[in-house]
Image 1: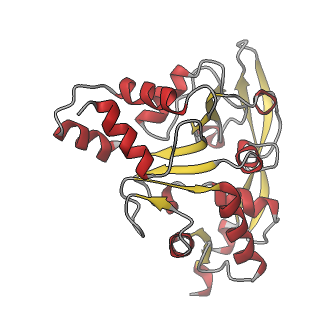
Image 2 (image 1 turned 90 degrees about the vertical axis):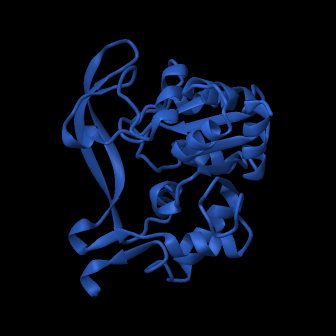
Length: 261
């Protein structure tokens, strides 16, 4: 078997198909080990290139390249600040050149059919309707995940929380130096809809993940397991999270309050 056939089957089992619009979170350490066990000769670049070609020019591949150091006072360089989202994310960041979104904490790189109007947007909050979370929803795209539980990957939940202005989060501004594609430095404000840490709020989404599996909205290698690859339509995900919030069931499903225990 060729490595391309192996990877093709891997993504198909997660219902990620050629030509899809997909926002993909990943930890490829297990996939890497499995490919080694199969005696394939490859590099991380090969996996990255396969993924770009697999989604293709007609599809859209969105990769999180989040880096949280701006919140600690470090300068963000859109050309050079590395992704903290794993080795595949960092490889794809480098390959994307200038196709990186603006936000200095929650940035993305994009391949394929690129929503250029979203790349041009600035000064928006991380999970807002100006972000790529909104674009992937309105474009009837998917959220894909490789070998990660929702707790360590599904930032999309916070997009829905911001859309609904939930009371366990609030808008916070972070100020710092930002170096753009033209190497121009400026002081900017970056907004993030953060949890109320001082109120004991902690993100906890394991129950939400189970709900999505129970309704067969997640499609993946193994039901109720984050092993391998899985995906979900963003519109379906948004609907279910909104319902939990509207029904006042978010406590214990989307977050917990350590101060009430």
